[in-house]
Length: 453
Image 1 (spheres, rainbow, N blue to C red):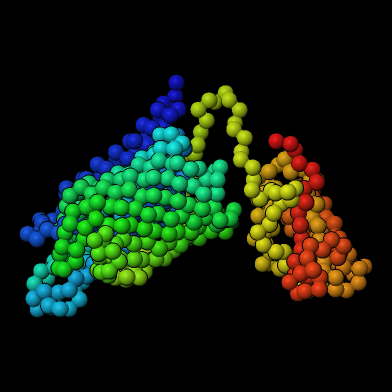
Image 2 (cartoon, rainbow, N blue to C red):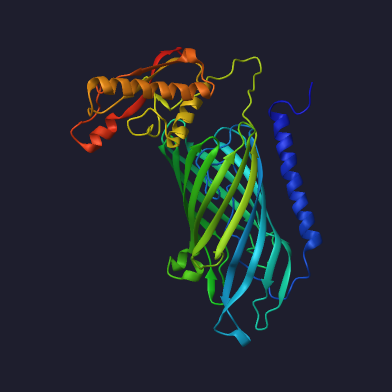
């Protein structure tokens, strides 16, 4: 019997990885923390906290969960410029004083699905570099490392987006005071919260999520800034550009419940975005992005840059002898056609494809490669009613042949393609309007033969 096979083996491997991360971080904390100053703060300033499961966004959660015994491991490096400023004391009284000028935070995280609707995970933040000034009458500068508060999260999926275009999950979490209180890396006490997650499949290539939550924590006032129980929120979107590329945008922040959006210092808001690249079926994703502070509250930097890498294990069958599960239907195949997400453009009165069309056609290639049951596709060329019937018929035929040539060059078998021009004979809109003629100038991919599922 081979080791690490089946659910128990995968659980052991993932748990071992999380344990190694935990003890490695604790080792760094114990042996790198300098002597603590007399003044100890009691609220954490780390506001960039990655979503620690295999979601669609950077810091905001999607409603989907990891599958049973599926795991994910990853890290983020986060650089922030001036994430904390106070009104100065002593010689700099009344002036805006930077308490943390720069820092680099590493977040090491992992999560494991226990069922298809329940998962748990952990995040371990470590300040690799912290350009810190003591917030005293005579500021003292130091640089150093320190640990942040460990977060343990659980997530329960209630509505699955695989069956609905709207999903819903509940995410309870707890933060343990393992961090460096002097350098604003810890709350100084246990904090606990809950997030309500709703996401929306707006389009096959566009998702959005809304995270709303409540964080219960100690009531602390420092330099006139009060941090107590907080309302947390975030909105994010993900656009699939194809070929493994995604664009992600986010806006998120917090506000103290007792001073609801009335005090800017306790109402940090930041926004930004970046790109994600998925390395094929390897399970690895690379994230690169940047944010800016919109409201200069506690934790919101002037500018933030981040780089992340994560690995998500594939979903394997529990029964090796069982036939593989049928893949879900491809949403790009609808009504007997391959539905394209953009128009196919040609040079005026020519059959020459414009490069603008290549990403759309590459998506058609992807559909046919992933759906071998699609045996024969007719590439249909259509025109508006300008020019003669004979001219339009010839032009549409040449254009459909040009599309076929492109698909053949990408490896699609010639036996699966046929090209036919229909000229102006099949309008779908009014040819008496500019908008209608633009709709009638089109290329369609009609499935003529397809294996039954």
